[in-house]
Length: 349
Image 1 (spheres, rainbow, N blue to C red):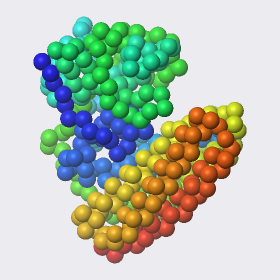
Image 2 (image 1 turned 120 degrees about the horizontal axis):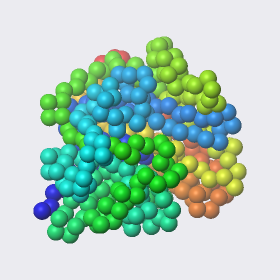
Image 3 (image 1 turned 90 degrees about the vertical axis):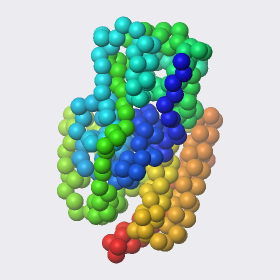
Image 4 (image 1 turned 180 degrees about the vertical axis):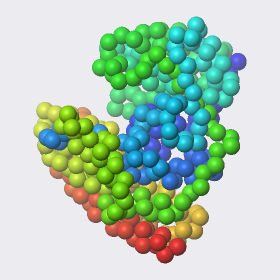
């Protein structure tokens, strides 16, 4: 028997939590409205020396939820999909369990040791999650999605035998192991009765918060939620995060590696923002086509910046850093100007 659930590319694919769940609901009318309202504002955490940065999204309805919620059925975010989990201690045959879940229309997320999946070509143990959307009994294959080193989030197949081995070897010591609950398997399905009310006023408030021109109290609450007195980590959110990336790059020397994901996150975000602008045009909240043209320019600049980052990871050169900083400064100015225009148009709607 062969069973493959629908699996599309995700607008946001920098982290697995976004990459594997957004395709479940992005093409559903109500799910799309939820997406437009959410995944707009984001934060970036960093240390005092700017040598470590991490980006993540906020949800519009809550002050302190991030990507970790994708794997928590008990989370308080009203996702467009149902999420359940099962302890691995209850599962005797992992292949049969996955087939049963897939046959019921659920996608599966679980942790494995990528070293034992031949497509990843790893020599060392590495525990990470993969997302499963199908199986093929005839060819003995598992259909999944995930990341390979220096490659985008993509679709892969793994033989039953190597998948079972990777699952059974998931509890060894690994740099990633301590962060994840390898003793639980999560599975997801779109909520057929899901309803969501897109609120223009809330969207505008989020845009203002993103540009740091809002008087909303959320920023204070978020700062309290994410700031640990015992930690040296600082937090910035919204468009000001670009300035943090600039300082991060200014402190990079040619002996250091750049966290490519943070620049890719930025690129992802600009594609995401253009998608939101297209939606606002479709429902005729804005009619100025120059908004889309402006965002296409921003995406173009972000992609060039990303390409310089990729070049730097292959062969570190100071000139690549200089170019990236120049493009980040341009992106900051262009996006701020276009979003101020969007806010003005929406407030007149």
